[in-house]
Image 1 (cartoon, rainbow, N blue to C red):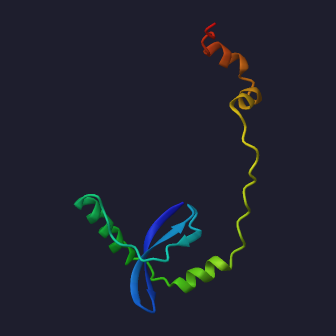
Image 2: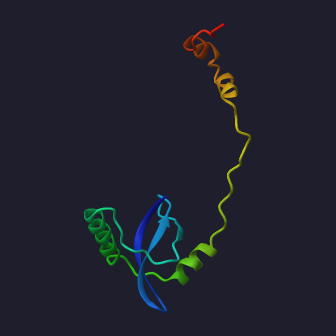
Length: 109
C-alpha cells in the first residue's frame, strides 16, 4: 500500500488529506481528518511541506467522490485464515528434520 497527500475541497474550504492506494493505483481509502505537516526535525518538516506542495499538482478531490468510488466497488475477498502451524509442523512439512537435528546441540543430561 502507498499513500500520498491530496488537496480536497469541501463545504469548509480546502485542505490536504492522506489518500491510500494499492500499488496498482486502486483507491483503498483516505483519512477523514485533514493532515498537518509535521517532522521531528526542521528538515523533516520541510520535506513534509514539500509533499504538501506536490499535492497541488494533482486534481483536487472531494470526499463525496472518493466515498462514491469506494462504495461502488465490490468488497475484497477475505483471506482464509487457517490454523497457525507450530515450528515442528513446518519442519516436518518441509522435511527438514535431519537438517535441524544436525544443527541442534546435544541435550544436556
